[in-house]
Image 1: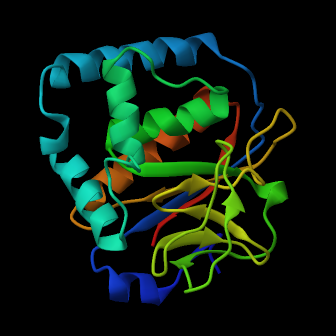
Image 2: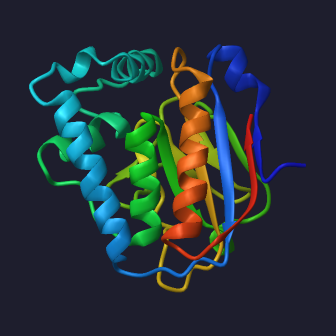
Length: 224
């Protein structure tokens, strides 16, 4: 059994959907790491050179995420897809900074145009699945302070006790990364229409950054 499971119902409902994961142990969480800061600055500069003045919504990956949000039932202008949010922040010179582990995930996400989340494995309970929200899901506390419920049929990440993340609204605060975190599960989700190569690139990037900037060891990685 893999560390992350993909419910066949997800791909039945949304052909072309992919989930990927990387399990990284032995990380050291720090407020910032100077070599990572330098890498973020380098990527932000590259993105600014490539996209400054362009119509962001015309980028193929952004179009795919926006289309998928609409298919799920969310307005992508009100609930911004994560890769679009990160790219816009990069172009403004305001790329988010949380800690070295989260920042590594965000960087891999924006470089690959793949939505990603990182979770403290010690705070996850039992098997972890990418599945579909049922018709009566309860609101849960998001990491940004909001309390929202996924829409019926929305792609969600769930352990055996609770929803960990929902595609259009974000991550639960329960498994968030803290300075006591030592093993993390990074989960990536594409939008149908975004090539597998993007997912491969996201996994390659976070595997590198997890080792180089977080002191971790990649134990598993897989695309489902």
